[in-house]
Length: 442
Ligand SMILES: Nc1nc2c(ncn2[C@@H]2O[C@H](COP(=O)(O)OP(=O)(O)O)[C@@H](O)[C@H]2O)c(=O)[nH]1
Ligand SMILES: [Mg+2]
Image (cartoon, rainbow, N blue to C red; front, side, top):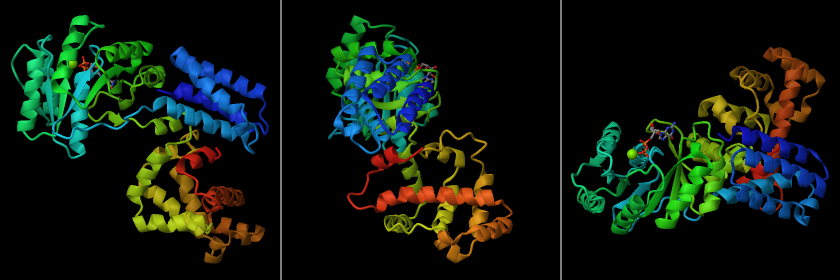
């Protein structure tokens, strides 16, 4: 959904980064384009203005102008500010000391509350919890039945109670969840077509009665700034603690996601990305900011890698990286591991700099050839690539059934990878993953 915005902002930043020297005028020009990209993505005007103000203030200061790589530095600032824009206090789901941890879902009709109740239940169950679902919607006859159906589909517990008083139903569900030993209770509330005073009062009474750990506003991302406005209305009446943005799989331009935190002060906790019960993800502002800026989802990649790497192996690799002993042999090993991690294209998408590559270029074939080239080298050549003169390169090319150009290309890539590794080994504090992502040349 951030596709277009992401492309535009990346284009601007790429141009700025290409300039060895930044002037106030070139920064201003670049930021004007970022502003257009923000407005095009339907970001709240005030939010866009504040955001750019913060970036400009830092960008035209000494920090950037005096740095050796001003362009890259600027990209780092944009990323930090974007992350700040998306981050709110209490990003993680709160839990209650005394179970059940009650989560009340509220929002306009059709925003996805009932669907999300099922998705959340499923997510919690996967994390080893025992959730119970309950509806307090007494206004639509089929509402309670719909929730029960969603729960059945996900093999989740759902409390089916009769009664016409939402507050009593809410209180009953807390009691029932406790009796059943459920540690989470997800309360699906009545929908509103638009802000409706009476229903709002009813919601406020439900919230007062059950004292939930979280009041989660479910907002349809496709409705853009309307979603932001209604979130604000709800927040005024019942204090929201989190936002769940649904339908991010649609053609939403991302403006709601980029402004709702800033306008309401309430963090986005989850995002819905489809109609299936598995289409709900925890929201990570830093990862989202990286994705938007095309820096790759480094953390997701690391997580994925961690589940594949043996722990000892990862440590050994880190040691090598720090001592800058990373050889072609290690390079080969890494390639083999990347293959084991799974779908190559998916992984490529998470690596900074490789996202833009068209799928045709990221074929398994190329990886296979890379492996063949390294395998055609002697162990000594693998550990000391500087030995690889013209005649050795020709021998390797014919041995691996490739061309000298391909061998050269591989050595160039290896050198680039090594350069990156050096950042780990240099003097001074170890760079954080964040700064690594920032410095990673595309
Ligand atoms: N594509 C997509 N559809 C969703 C998502 N979340 C909910 N929906 C759909 O939105 C519609 C309304 O959802 P529902 O849960 O009944 O909304 P409620 O009135 O707030 O309870 C349904 O057709 C859902 O399948 C999502 O993340 N992506
Ligand atoms: Mg519903």
